[in-house]
Length: 182
Image 1 (tube, rainbow, N blue to C red):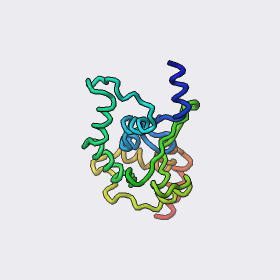
Image 2 (image 1 turned 135 degrees about the horizontal axis):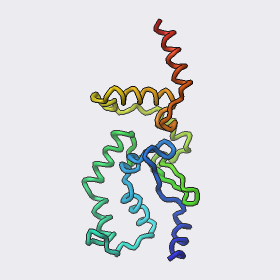
Image 3 (image 1 turned 90 degrees about the vertical axis):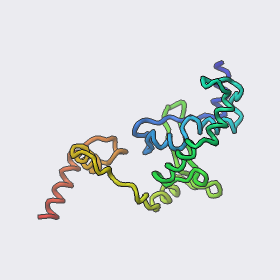
């Protein structure tokens, strides 16, 4: 059993691990919309690393479940939301999901398209240049305390800054705003 794990680990040295707010700027929701575990399993199947004939809790084989997922309406909707929310087209844009199983850290990266692979720096510039989805906006029903928390968090470096307050930065921005307004 350990030998199987070691053999497969050498062929696929990185697996997916995400956290509620990351790591490295990509929340769990992005991994879900990219297809989550079933999508990773489709890639593992293409590499010939799965026993597709094993039965699953659905009573179907793993292969049958992956066939279903690949053609499912749910997958289609997830992929559509990925385009809407993140501006990433899963059929054109290439998303790389990396986790170093030794360090247990990783990332989800846009790395270009099937015909045009980009460096991380080039991909970041492409994403930066894309217009955000016009429907992306705060929920109108957010309570005031949530709106205040979001504003303070934004000033402090945002979600990717660790969701912590940078009191000095907040005071600096408030003072600059006071000077500009008064």
